[in-house]
Length: 229
Image (cartoon, rainbow, N blue to C red; front, side, top):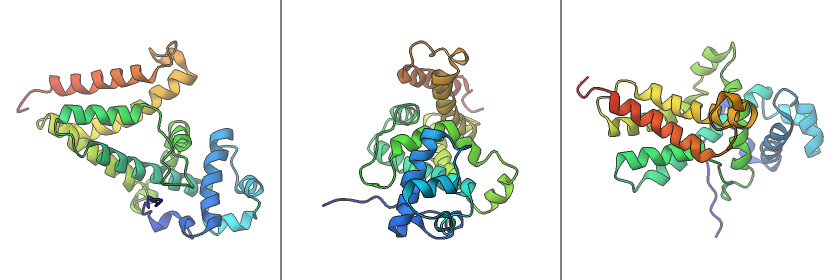
């Protein structure tokens, strides 16, 4: 029996739920493939329509514009990743081991989840690295935030922040460190492959070194924080 993973999305992200029709699922599947291959700047609904054999108007029935589609994709990814983090750390008792598992999940290649046939998470992960910040680095960020469009990202940071406090209940900056881990994992991956002089991993191109760097960053911070401070 095939098990499908269903992720509930904020209804303000779309005009029509893409998960409820074959065309909607094709829009998600092919937009991920198109953006990954050509970049978000070059992406248009007209080009997507040509790729999947539908009309541009048909795509606009699902999404207001391409930026709202990008927010949808990033929100979907963060929700999926929070599920992975919770599932894979559920039976781990040691908070240090648990946090190291999270760092590994954030900093290494993602495998496609066969339970989501219309989303290739391995490709979507690459889009998050290269395009993800474009979802919220906009003039509309405050309005979008009021509509809770970034809640999945905040929820993931909250989960990781709680794990940080399990390691050191007196640490003052759990949310800041949580979001730093996530963004640093992606920036270092991007720099390693595109701007290697900005990292110490440009020659090796080894994600394992990013993991070690983040572990050093995180646990040095937690250990240096004064107990009771």
